[in-house]
Image (cartoon, rainbow, N blue to C red; front, side, top):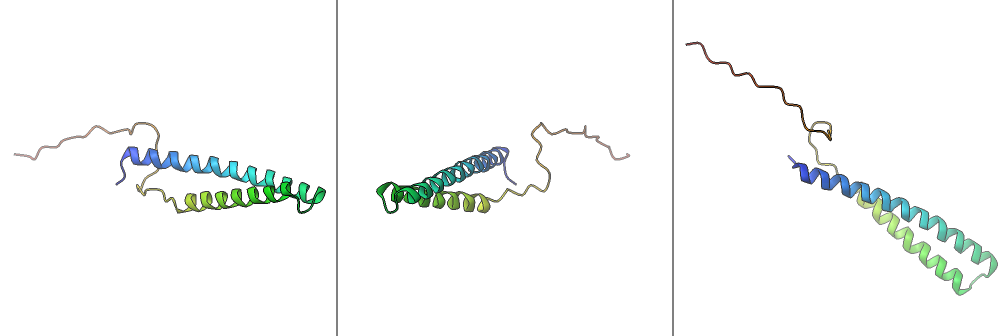
Length: 98
C-alpha cells in the first residue's frame, strides 16, 4: 500500500507533467508558425532553420513528457482518493459472554 506522501508526490508529478506538456504544445505551435512564416518569407534562411530546429526540440520534449505521463501509473489503493482526513467510525468492542 502506498503511503500518503508517495500519493501526494505522485499527484504533484502528474500535475507538473500536465502543465509542462501544455507549455511544450504551445511552444510547438509558436515555432511551427515561425518556421512556416520564415519559410514563406525567406526559404532556406538561417532563421527558418533555427525555427525548424526549435520546433523539433519542442516536439521531442512534448513526446517525452506525454510518454512519461502515460507511463506514470497511479498507485492502486483500491478506494477513491479523498483529500480530507478519513472519517473513522467508532469501534465497538463486544466482550464474549462469560
